Length: 423
Figure 1: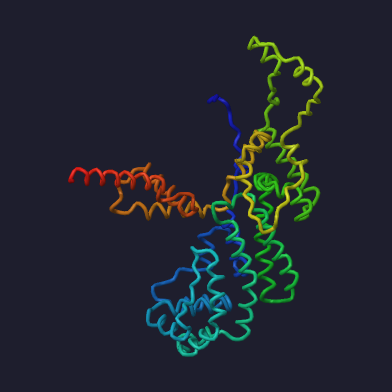
Figure 2: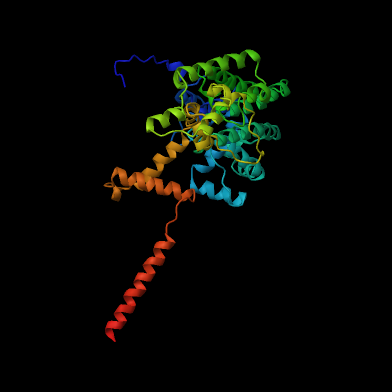
């Protein structure tokens, strides 16, 4: 490699955004549309969640109360969990069920809290009446409950979108489809509830945030490239699926084509050495019939790999069938047919949609390396984590049955020898 070669680094083109972060920002805007638009997580958390003091005082409760029914529900949840006595009293009423608390560090916690609250509505109403001295202004009315219930449909969509981009098999090809899925829901919601003073602004704020970041995906072709390199989607996903405008498709095609030609496509196709030439080099005389046959075979036209891939029909599959595009490109057939395009596909489809899986791996390592195991070497940690991963996927067996059979046979043979010596 030439170390003197100059590299042009376009940070905007190479930057890919964390999809879970985008979904979370949109969800927060949906829940609290009156808060100023701010994409800084620290500032946003301070505005929405605040800093809870050791004692949840009246001033703090007043701040939350201004945020509407969600703020009241938050006050009730925090009030219950501030002492074990209150929690035990609530569990007696709720059938031993807890009311989860919203958490700024755990995404979709508002959805889980609200979903449980709707189930425990009667218990929450009873508890707030029993503690009306402290929770008089946080008692939820029928209108409040109706507004909370109207939010659950949209929070569930955020939850499903987040789950869809989690896991080791969810890569960059899911980012645009998930955003399209959410935009479609909130596009319909903002028109459907345009006259609703509560839900209308929520849907509009959620849509605005998604639209803002969706437009930013045009800065890098990796998002589109990952989608079109899934053989079950290709360009038909944008032309016939989500119905992109012709100008958008043309710009995206130009961008992907440029990356293919600049970074992956070979300057000249690899030429095969003629069989007759190889025979001459070996000093052997070639069969004349085979030489005649080869001359009468039509040589296929050399076509660009990317162009050939795009012209082939979209792969059809059952809707319930799970398809692994990364595994498809790793197959030997694709490696031979598309030697260079497969490299581009593996590069793009190896980009995770979220870093949650990597963070789980760090957490798993922390569990492995305890205070009493702090001298475990790097190789041992790597081997342990690989075994744990393989075990979860049922790709490794703890016991080799053939080895056990051999071991049992050897033990029995030694036992028989011992008995013979005693006799």
